[in-house]
Structures are given as structure tokens and as C-alpha cells.
Length: 396
Image 1: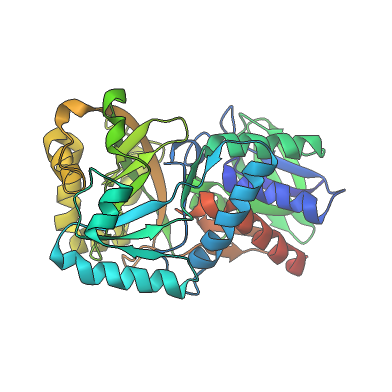
Image 2: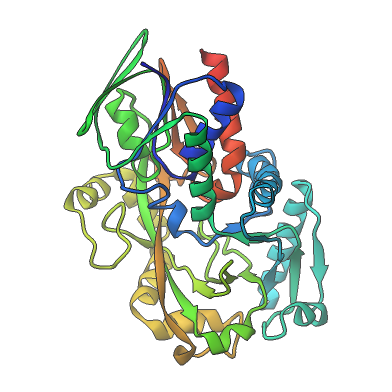
């Protein structure tokens, strides 16, 4: 009988395990992960950005956890000798229509307690000489890191404290009762006093296995990237983002200097035909059928059909993708880019077609289910872990 069992070995699940040992040093903790390594999916395929919290609604979990997580993630990396660079980023208005949106975003960041600065065209070009822009917001607290390395360090710390990480193990059934939960897997049965679901792309399915109907479904969106060739990396000094389109719930294509020195360009946002579908050819017919039968998806598709069509075109047309990037850096050409990695974002969607905008926690009898933790979950992971453990201590 374990005191706590966590399903999911991504950065959120590992951060929960780390926080549990901080609160309960003598607890027995088990982490169940279906892959052969930790951080195999969202954590290992994201952009590596340490976000500031500028985009999120003031007072939301995202806003609070991103701001606090920016500091705690940086401190964690510095403490454990992991490479981290608080390089800052610019959010750029490329035309006059975007200037009011830029002003609104600046005010939101101020409301979230961030240290920001508006840049003139001349000041922007001092920061990023090749950027096309009329004005920009300077966000000095944004940075870059390898979240895969962070996750591996968390896993090592958990193991040092006596925690067990069961890799290559798929959960098949969950039965909750007054004493805890029984988890049946393809590698045996585990008993636990308390279950914490951090299964990311499969979090809704794990909640359902435990007997909880949540008014949302995980819909996977693939983000595809290109990389700048080494001889063109000088075009990007740090992080360059566009002003987000208020009519579309993603941040738009941007340029990201990675912690290893490479520069990523992207992503787009297209429906993935598999929850872990990193290639266009990856298809899981069960995943497809779930999305197609889901009323919320069709309401979302109706609302964003124009933007969704443009994203699909960019997925298949490098020329169109590059044209989008040239809004920010006109000097970028098709020849400057080579195919890069892809990631899949687990986005919860309600039955009425609304994207769940904030982190979502669902309480069970002896369980807690993290049913929506998209970006900036990696940035905020240490804070999410502490908040979940605080909730668990209240329930137990």
C-alpha cells in the first residue's frame, strides 16, 4: 500500500512527487509511467521557454503560477546546476492594427505584476536587429531551459528520497473505495491511499477509468516547427513573439533560441489525428473517432474554421509557413529553414466548444485529477506541484 501514487511521469507528475516529499518526507510514493522514460511527450517536445505570465487573465491560476513558477524554475535550475538563461523576449507589433492589442497586452502584464517595458521601433532594433516591427514589449524575465533535463533531475531527486518510478507500465483499470484506490496495470496491481492523475494527453481517460465524468475532452493539437540553419541563427538573438491573434487561442508562430543554441521557428497549430501524433502520418482511429463524435469539437471548428484552414495550409506549405515568419523577420527565406521537431498540446475542450482556459483540477473520493495543464504548465510545474500537495493535505 503506497501513501501516494501519481499516474504520469511528465514534468507535472514529477513536480508533484517532489513536492510530496517536501511535505511528507517519510511517505511512500509511486509514479506510474507508460513510456520507458520520463518526460516522453509534452515535457520533452515543448519549446523550452520559461514564461513570464504576461498573456494570462489576471487572478487566474495560469497568471499566478506562471509568475511564481518563473522564479522557482530558475532557482531550481541554478541550485542543481542545470543550464538556464533568462534572456528576455520581445512581443512585436508588425502593423498599426496590432498597436492597440500590444497596449492591451502590456496592461495585462502590468496587472499581473510583471516588470515590462514598451520599446520604440528604434529600441526594438537594438534588441533584435533583424525584426520588422513598429513597437514591442520587452519581457526581461522570460528565459530558456531544457525541461527534459529538469524532469530527469526531478526523477533523480524522487528516487534518492525513496520514491519509485514504474516505467513501461500502462494503467488498465482503477477502483476507488473509502480506503484508497486499486490500480491494475499490465505489470501488476498497485494499492494506494491517494491517487493523483497527471496523465497529460490521457488525463481525461484516467479520470474516466476512476469513475469520474468530466465535462471536457482532451483534443490534441500538433505544433510543427522548422529550425534555422546554423549560418542563419544570427537573425535571432533571443525570443521573438508576435502579438497574439485575439480571435485564435494560440500564440502564433515565433522564433525561439533554444538552450543548446539552435533556433526554432513555429509552431503552427493543427488537429492531431493521434494524441501522441508527432508526424502528419500518425493516426489512431480511436482518437480520431473520439474527436469526430465530440460535439464540442464541431462547435470549435465552426467558430475557428478560417484560422484552422490557414493553419492546415501552413502545415503542408513551407512557402506559406515562411511567409508567416517573414512578418517578424523579412530576411528569412525557405532555404534558411530545415524541418524541426513537433509537439502535441493536450487542450481540454468542453462540450459547448470552449477551450478550457485555465488549469483544471477535479477532486475524487481519494484522488485528484489534473485534467487541463497546457502551457505554461512546464514553467509553472513546481508551483502546480506545491498547490496540488496543499489540496491533497486538505482532503486527507
